[in-house]
Image (cartoon, rainbow, N blue to C red; front, side, top):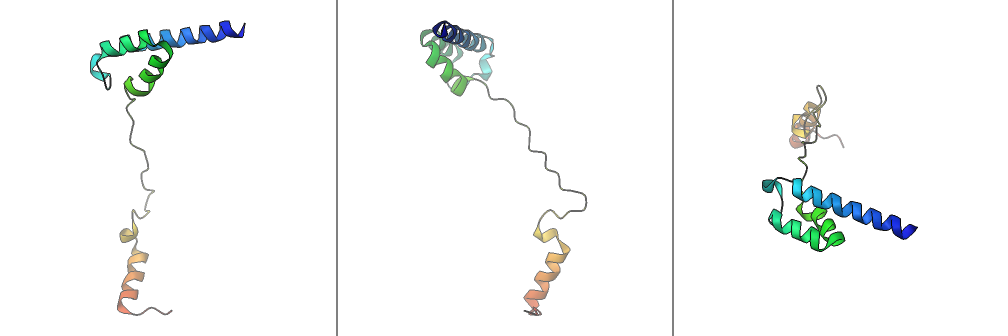
Length: 97
């Protein structure tokens, strides 16, 4: 029974991979031409599908990481007035330590 389930899972993965290659637009396929990907997935079912998923499938567009600075928070040390005041004091030699 377990062999039948594994076989069905492999068949489903192979069909999904093949359908994914066929429906992907030509200009979004990576590394090799679309026709060659179809041959790879058809002729080498499990390994071809895995390679398609890793190397041929289009990458999802990634949005920039949204990290806006908080209101009134300095963006860097040179924007922090306390840091600049302390730096100026140390450069003049007024350091108390």
